[in-house]
Length: 386
Image (cartoon, rainbow, N blue to C red; front, top):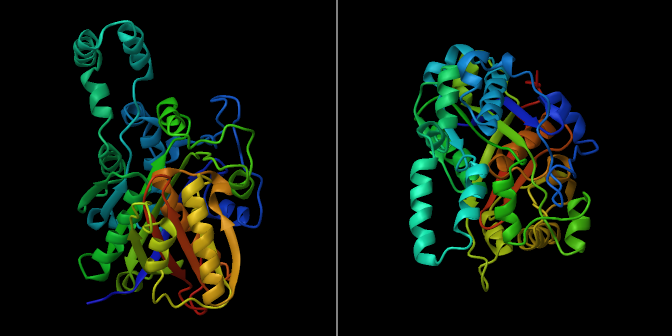
């Protein structure tokens, strides 16, 4: 059994703001929103101003969530509302891509200060002691990745099966792939899938900075960063999609936004011949691309994945139909790690729904590892986007 998968709802929040209309307009060319001062020397795309009360009860629920959980729960509510699916949440499956939660940076600093001058054997003992006594139970629980899914279930009443994937960009790509596959196989009629990431976090910036991945100058687009040696600019974003089988959507009279026809994922070792370009090329095998297809590029700006994607797209141009516009999502909203691939699919759906291209090829290239492709197509001229 193979069902056609429709995208019937999009919840998209980024540094630009919230909603489909704003992001659809931004594809035509919008100035990015960048904060270059708060985490200098690293520019980021910051959290937008949101009226959280529209989606999350103020008493209790907002206070016990970390910022990335609030952001994701908010975007999930937008997607459910956009799909007109509030009455379907009890049967809605949920698949979330999530990171490891936010660290207590104050505690980290205090521990590092204490152990800096100690010999290794004493430092190890003190580290264990401080972490055991310093992390409150509530703070420890806040680190659990599946709390985003839990908060979505509590706040929005989504009580179908629930899964949380960890693994940065790969987690999000596999979340979408598996959600679509389960629906396509007839194991459910509707699912909510997505992820969220907050860029304004010293713990994550230090992690990427220590590996030499971050851009340190004033903001520049991906192409300029790549020409100058590469560098990542992280972005705050949350993207959730309501996916439905065509039969389920038609039965309730829903109007689809676009068809999600293909989702493929891979993970190159990025050593020797096993490159990001080669993996993406293998994922693209037998894709039926149409002349003028748009590319929603997941290039991060980091050196290796961005070069790999550029080579892959050049290969497609040389061997396949003519490409249409190429939209660099990292120029628009930054690179939001777990939210990057769902956001790309959302932008691809908006592109084809507006009639701007016959197809949208969405690419995903992880900073460290993880390649993914998705193909998004219009539903039919007789069923316009509402």
